[in-house]
Image 1: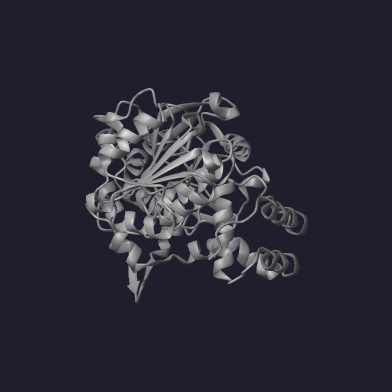
Image 2 (image 1 turned 90 degrees about the horizontal axis):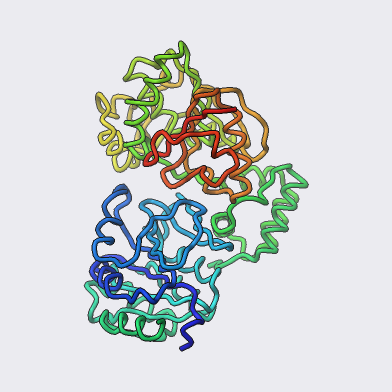
Amino acid sequence: MHKNKYKAIVIGGSAGSFQVITRILAELDLKMDLPVILCLHRLKHVRNGFVEALSIKSKRPIVEPLDKEKVKRGVVYLAPANYHMYLDLGYQFSLSTEEMVNNSRPAIDLTFDSVSYVYKEKVLGIMLSGANKDGAWGMKRLKDRGGFTIVQEPKECTIDTMTTAAINITKIDLVLKTDEIIKFLNTELC
Amino acid sequence: MIEDIEINDVRSLTQIVKEKYDYDFSNYAISSFKRRLIRIMELYKFDNFEKLLVRIKNEPSFFKEFLSELTVNVTEMFRDPSLWRELRDKVLPNLFESHETVKIWHAGCSSGEEVYSMAILLKECGWLNRAKIFATDIDHSILAKAKEGKFSVKNMNELNDKNYYRYGGTTQLSDYYTTEGTNAQMDKSLLANVNFMEHNLASGLAFTKVDIVLCRNVLIYFNQNLQNEVFRLLHQSLFNYGYLIVGSKETLVWCDIANKFITVNNEEKVFKKIRD
């Protein structure tokens, strides 16, 4: 894997993913300075607290982007509550209050699809534990555009619906446990 | 299931719409705009983009429907209750102390939830008959809905009620509507000082001068160029020392008129005009 090939990492998750994300953000080598874009299912009306909780052990700053904010290296972006988060050409985040997709807002499908549209094959997509199928289609779009796909090992997931759906919809490059995901990112991208 | 729309198709559509109907969508934010088009294609069961283009081109009545479906009308009463507390406790007292009548503009009012929320706030503070409220939107049919004031009981119970409670209203939200089957009919007396009218923010046409404008979760559907233009319009529509309120994840910091405002509350996105 060419470490300089990738320009961004996008991660999707729902129920059971919080611990995994926390660990990734704590153990990811700072030399890996790609932007990390997170789309996690979250309570619609809880605006504060999630970023703070994720930030406790994170080595990098975590930001809920404003509409039209530009992606920066070394920063972790978290989809804000009750908004869909797209990435537009020009590396700008674009938010929306449209209807829920897959019963979710933010919807992982929309983030993954638009991120892979912008970065094409230069993005690495990771799907984590979750209780619905949101993200599977987005993962497929990412893979179809040449991106690299990693899914958390379903047996390790708190709920394996999300990861299994991703595995079933497209050819996933790697199915890994959390430890292995972290090791992979630290070895291959630094 | 339609997965994507080509950028060239989007351009063809915006070109046709501009030429035939004089609406300019060329500066709408592309991701959400594409998504709206896909949604419309699925709604009308068009299996290819050409079908949508043809109907828009040939049927003005279809275009009206298209326009209604294009705009995003997902909204809540007292959305972001903390903002409404800020309005009640800081912003509006400021205005009502120094003005006999306060002019309020809801720009992009959609189905009216924000307007009714404002009317309720004003009524509970005893300011309702000192307010002159303008509520505008690009879509005539959503304005009609707003005027009618029928919201779903489901939304009332699941969303609006909770927001009103978090806001800290003086009574219960149900005091302001009557239930008619699955609909909640808002008390029409709340609209006593409200004028609903069609207005297209993207057209650049000036609006009447007001003391406070709320434009929340509308700008997100515009690209940065258009946001710049709309901010200019909003700035122009404000009396000096008037307030601009945008959505909780929107900002004016990257726009030309940024230095003509100060930030009153960054968490709630309340800005005050300090120069013309």
